[in-house]
Picture 1 (cartoon, rainbow, N blue to C red):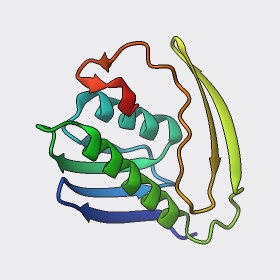
Picture 2: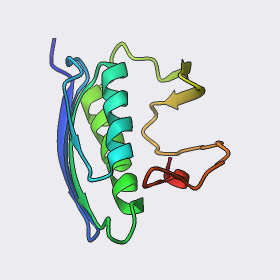
Picture 3: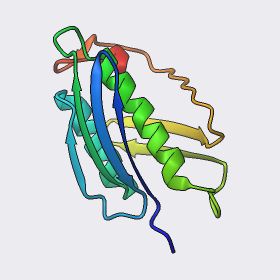
Picture 4: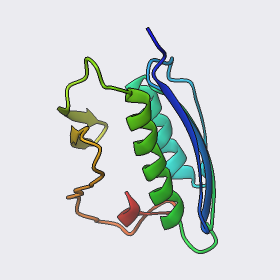
Length: 136
């Protein structure tokens, strides 16, 4: 069986990102975006999905976190699409509800190749540490 993995780099005026994803990895992870809470969440994503993930991102954090968070999200989507290859044996649609600590997260995904996000979460506090809640 071929290893389902992908690696890519994305460089824009605001960010410089290199990343690697191994879907059938051991959840090995090295994540450095310069944004502590975001690194923590990406670490959890890798750990609980079983996906090995390496992300190194440099961004215009002196302006705000928006460009880095957005571009890392784009890179993760592109990595997933490439790593899945022809998607043989993968259902196009899936959903899950995950209770973790005091949170219940519902997620539905469509692996159709068209990026979109619907985010229906009330923002009750402006920041989590230094992280702007609206970027969550």
